Length: 588
Image (cartoon, rainbow, N blue to C red; front, side):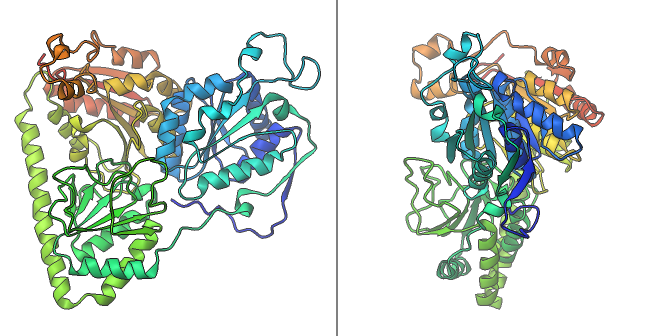
């Protein structure tokens, strides 16, 4: 979703807002930019957020809602989930270098998510004790929190970073940070704020708002490229569309449906899925499919379009990649080749392609399109039927078969559920889900596990009318750490469901080791380091945080347990359903 602001600019004259200090100015600029939430993990030097927001609420003025989160990793993941569902900029706050480091792998996720998040952290005071407001106090740890370059901790994972200084205009700085975050390719920015600067007195905050600075409009595709691509697609016998991230803008979903139905184009999931780009229930949706027989491949906003190997497109295939940043500068080495790269917004490209195809296609072409749609619809139906048959064949297996669990999840979740998928390919849950609505499915956009619980909590705050579920393996769930998001969910009455695939195994420490060292010493030793038993009782942990918790070992109870968890969420209490599966590479 492209942020264009909530109001027209009636004037370029800067706003002028009465404030008591720079901390209030920071919050005022966030408010003017439409930031609704600040995800906050306490620190002595970021108390200005608490004061400024409480003051605004007491005086009846607008301000972001401060959301207290008890772990920074959950904090940032919650911000990502909130931004993903709302399409609006979100802010976070953490304590000095320690809190910044505690954001952890969520910083990696933010970098690859393509979402507008302003990550902030305090800077410990360095002014001599008693020399000014906010100066050092007689606490030894204040000296230890100094770093030469705190921003450097996250610099290679952000679009922009800045250390706020006394001479800076704090309101302008926040507006500028959000301008960069909201401009495609969108992504995280980082602002560090010294305590002395945040507490510095001020009479007013005069600054340009985000709307006045202006967020760049989406890039339109180059006309000659559209004409060439449309001609190639019309003439193609076996074209395929590959998707991953285009669904960041929900408006692309119906546009892609119209275009694919016009041409009978099948839609394949890329090697790294991220967003809901096409209805999973649509006859033209194929999930993961080989591209080796395709003669034209249209790749829409994808980082990793296919796996190198026998199922990749042939050298004779025409490959077109559409992306707001098609060179993928965030990834140092990329070997995927393309015949055409369009620097363009997906929605504008689809609209232009549809217009051009309608203009140049003949009646005979449209007959070919219809026949192709029928062929792929039949293929899709066979795929779904085979998946269901395989799952049902394993319905009585004990321990519970992963296919049976994934099938039951797909059957249980209705269309009002938003899914946050933090599983890996072993689960196959993506193949069984029936998500049809835009913004109904999000997959971990990067490779840092533990994203889903926090993201699900943040999403629920942004979409109170939707039910939200986090689906995760037990290894990633322990990375989350899930209990902190459950606490925040209870605190802010934002319940969500968690489903845990509990196989007590790391795929990295079992399957990947086995692939590198078949019949090696690690295999003979039983993959020490690949298993974690006895496991944590996630149901008991959930109950300790005020949530409903249930462990499932009987395959007959999978469906009923999911229904009990869903019922709990609908009634206002988060739930964790942990399902016992076989260990990887070992039968239990």
